[in-house]
Image 1 (cartoon, rainbow over the protein chains, first blue to last red):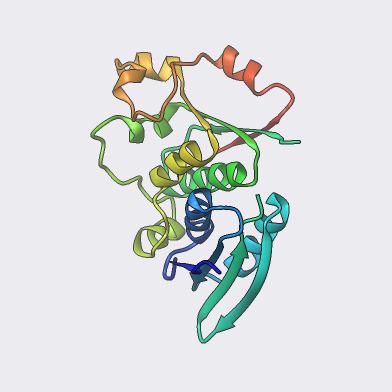
Image 2 (cartoon, each protein chain N blue to C red):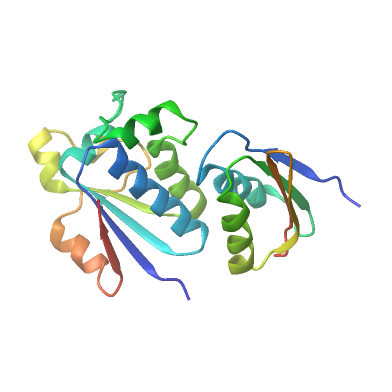
Length: 76
Length: 129
């Protein structure tokens, strides 16, 4: 199993975390898992919305302390 | 099927440029076809070497400057890099400023007249900031 790429987008605001995720997603291979870290609460809604619209796979989304951890697998 | 999102930027205030840039970047991220037409006070921030901050229209503009919000220029540039958004300068504004499209940031397309922009935006949504 390939290593999970962690993208630390803490302390930036919408749409910064989403744009960070997309930048790394473009470079990733199909099947790669990216974990986005964000302190922006809107990210918890916006990123799953984007993932569903584009057709990637949302693996998990959970808030640990003040940080959202959102794992996404590149599907195409 | 992607939608055509057309954004008309005329204001030079931080809040309006920020919102337009947010809209452009998120729209391309979701697969929409985005064209942004810059005129009036909005255009001057994209002249090469221009480093002045856009003035705040109100309290929120001051917050934008103080917090870790992605700069609007960065978001517009990401919209081009990630989703092929078109950034088009108004030919009239270029004439008044006595510059050409070559004097703008490299992400900008050719000088564009309002008639051509209206043709490009036909059938799509038009948002004005």
